[in-house]
Image 1 (cartoon, rainbow, N blue to C red):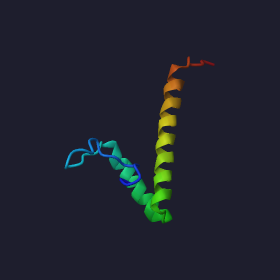
Image 2 (spheres, rainbow, N blue to C red):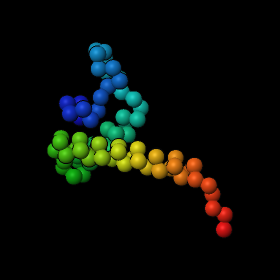
Image 3 (tube, rainbow, N blue to C red):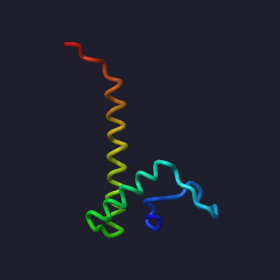
Image 4 (cartoon, one colour):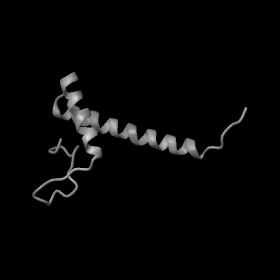
Length: 73
């Protein structure tokens, strides 16, 4: 995941790499996907990128829904 850019440290120039807390969820998901579906590294990277994109889009939908006026029947 590091080689293909799916997972990147906060500051790659440092000798000790640190990752954001949100990356823990990504790593756990990737491990499950790889184990359950026997994905090769490229397929795993694609699946993780698509899942992250889905999360971003879902957050955008929730934000837009919150801006809509409430319909009272």
